Length: 449
Image 1 (tube, rainbow, N blue to C red):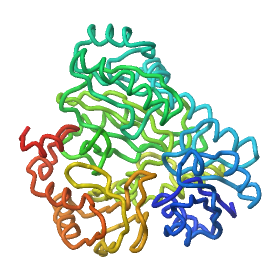
Image 2 (image 1 turned 135 degrees about the vertical axis):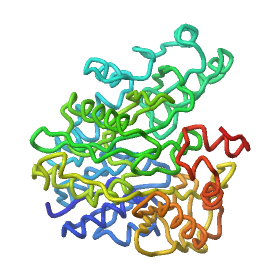
Image 3 (image 1 turned 120 degrees about the vertical axis):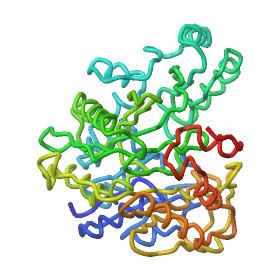
């Protein structure tokens, strides 16, 4: 492979460029008018203005992106995460154009992208799933009927959703009635489908996911698990690997479920099996993400594996440098902090000019930047401006190092959530690693659970 087009933006585009440079692969990127000064554009070998800030008029323009790839004679397209990464139509268009799509096949993306279809596939494979509807909620009455039979609270979800978007907890019929139509419209706007379904809400659940990878010989390996339970608005803000306070038997069960789930669909390339783990450590399949995850760096830090390099080589039909699960080992502990341009405690986005952007460097500290000093953070995209990933030999050392990094970091000109991370360092639940998906809300309310 000599040239690769990155159909994405910001920090993930820059992160892919980093691996491409190591592999001596030229890179082509696209950018919107709002992103014209971002670092990834300067680091790429070639950059094309694709349109105005709105994603529908820029980063989601499949035909235009494909034409640029053809013009540049790109061998492959890497979709990153979000945007077109799980768009089966785009993957199919890329392959039909004779270009390598770095990811699983369009058929797998399609089957796993629809959460209802994915649930059915997993049930047939013997994978445990969260109790829920087997078909979409065609209307409010169907939703009410399931919820009354299953018992409240329930989670109302977009069938094609992701990233916490199109997901609402409903504690009673009044709440379900209130949110049904608005969630349907939001799902249609974000994912092109208003299809919804309902799952039973599991209280005090941990959100644990497993990084999986399918090779060219039909093997599926796991690269251990990540705990993604520290969330705001159903979206992850801190992820760590390995998961704290998890028994060895539960961990082994989670890893086995993940491999079984991926094997059942003949998965190839990088992917993630997301699970909900209840208070008794029962694990249930939640969804499969058929792409690279925002939090993939924590896995890279504990395994020493460059997942993007593996992705690129596998997409070319090359074998992995390993042949057996036991060859993948883990070392130490890693925590990722997603740095957002937002109010640290209300989570309201805070766009503006980054007058200062400085994070402490040092051993075991990785920073994946999307922006740098002098860049404008606009309201058109997710407000994540960087990811700070800390690695150490133990979780305790990792937290100590995290404290210092947060204290020394300087992000000025707009609000960021660094003060929230600093506050969490003193929260007993986080220090002990004894937290679930509602812990952050409880901490902010002053409740200790």
